[in-house]
Length: 241
Image (tube, rainbow, N blue to C red; front, side, top):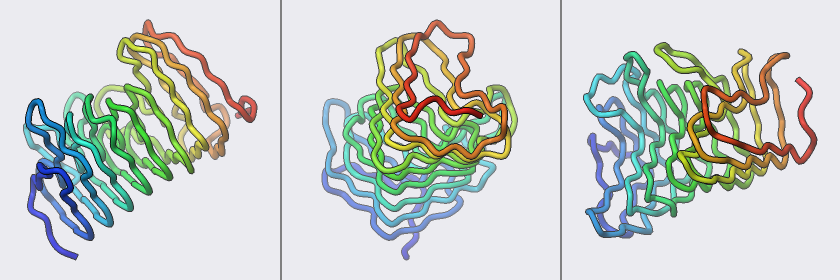
């Protein structure tokens, strides 16, 4: 296992990070960056671990992996953890994906112990067997979602600051979105909402299979102060909690 330096950039098509470990960097483990007006594709991040300090104080949002517009590729068998920046609203994401990076595929990726989201996704999320744990929102989705295998959320955690924890946080961001989850596994010790909806727009939510190990009384769905509309379909039948 080699050691990466902070701000390891992927800036050319076909670049790879394979079998690397890095600890205690300030901004991020890896940033996939495409110059304005270009597309950087076929990037590969595999068999890596990205561990933050747990108390980042950077003026920039700390994130384990930062996927920028115009990039695409695959992230596989990767773990990111301890990305956190205290404040009025706790910041810090494991995987941060901005709008305009729709062609990433995530396979067996785990993100945990983050001040805000384990996965904060503003582009189309395509994932297989991904796990978000011990973040305020293990999954934050602003766009369409299509999963295979299992999507696992574990112990939403309120580290501090404003904002309510939830297993999956949704904001259609003014558009019409589809959240299509093949098999959702949710485990928790505290009764935080399974789904929290904010923002504007419309979202259709399809849960094809589910395994829920959460406390009795856990809200299945909560709509915060929001103009967003939604439909919610549990294909195995609505859970009784």
